[in-house]
Amino acid sequence: MTTAPERSTDRPVRVAWPAVVAFVALACGLAWLVALPLWLGDGLASPLTALLLPLMMLTPAIAAIVVVFAFRVPRGDRSRFLGLRPLRPVGRFVVFLALGLVLPIAIVVVTTLVAGALGLVRLDLVGFSGFAEQIASTAPAGTPLPPIAALVALQLVAIPVGAVLNSVLAFGEELGWRGWLQTALLPLGTWPALLITGAVWGLWHAPIILLGYNFARPDLGGVLLMVGGCIAWGVLLGWLRLRSASLWPAVLAHGSLNAVGAFVVIVAAAGETPDLALAGPLGVVAWAVLAVAVGVIVLVRQFRPGALAAPRTATPAPVAVTPEGDPR
Image (cartoon, rainbow, N blue to C red; front, side):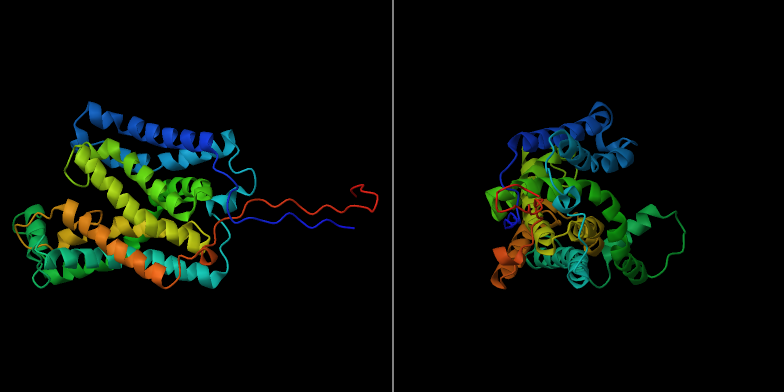
């Protein structure tokens, strides 16, 4: 007779805690190492900033590669575990790529409008006076400029292109966060895996947040704001990863978020300096907008276990056994 093949599972069987601890320590340690020249020099004003920040985005991928080979997690199909494949069914893959592009843009735009409606930032959606002020301050005196509406339109049209370009570096982060860490934590349950991954993602930013990056709050408050923002966005990006059974929609969503992050600055009124802790894409208003978006996803039953296509672990091949019990 022939034994039934071992049933495949949609999640790792248990959390490999030594590998998880090593991954977090390595990703965060490398981030601090990369940012060290900024701490020893002029901070974010250093000319090295433009080089070191992209390099820092690669550290989660390096950590993932190290633990995959050093700890053999996973032991089975690595590319499927990390979400690098499959890219089918093609229809589903394309739909979630589109969502990865569009959702961050929509959420940041809605966040900005809500912040404006609440009086947290003054907006100028007609004359774009704040953006005009920025352009005038950077252009040489007497330089003829096209209509400000045309410049704004150009900025907005460039966002999808920027999303794709930003995805190249975002891949370095997403391979670590949604590719390896979130998947490794899935035995804890979907929500714990999403929330813990988001919190680690936020803490990983500490070396540059403490220099004033993102919120201009170089203190514990700034780090906590970043953790909150990364948890909120991490639920959405993590859902894209699980629902699509692919890492690539999360990669594009991360790139899209980075590309549209300055939207509030484009539409702010002249003389206004938006408080990014409130009105920015990682700020408190964005948390609320993301909570509503995730709530809608839950209500339409797209967060139910049957809809989430987590990566499969390797399945041993069936073994044929003779009546006498000798394997063939």
